[in-house]
Image (cartoon, rainbow, N blue to C red; front, top):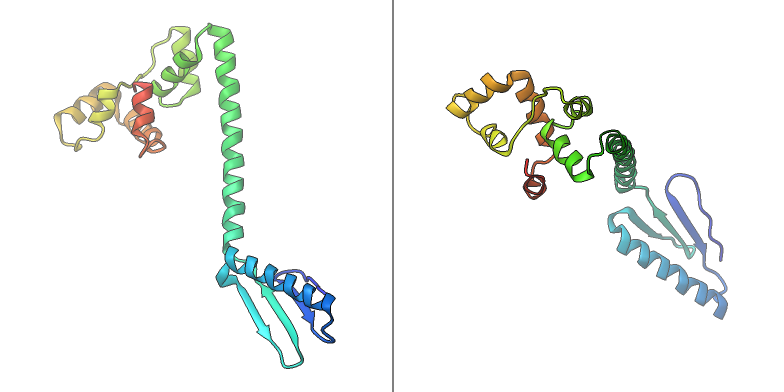
Length: 180
């Protein structure tokens, strides 16, 4: 009894002849492998029984692996962003002697703009956002609250803020912790 694997879809071919006790055990192991594969990815397994007692098992690669790879690559890119962000926060901490919680709160208030964050710590005037202003962003554009935002922040800053807050949609708990 032999196993062979080919490129592309995994293929396990077993010739069954002269069933000795050892071959029966190997056959049993083969079917255990097949059952495991079936449990992992049932629609991707194809078992064909042939007249000459040859069993061919095709395990086709599926889109799940591609999705997992894409998710992994996305997570790696995100990790790199967080490492860069952490390094930037460390530099700000050393330069301005600010605590990390203060740096993070200020980062949230300037919509994640590191240049503005640096300017803020240097004492320059920058556009900062509050929790109430973020709530006003959810109001209709013809509301008084939204109109006040346009006058005080400007449309460009409003669009930047909306884009920044999109990343936190569904995570209001985090925003509440940051008191933004």
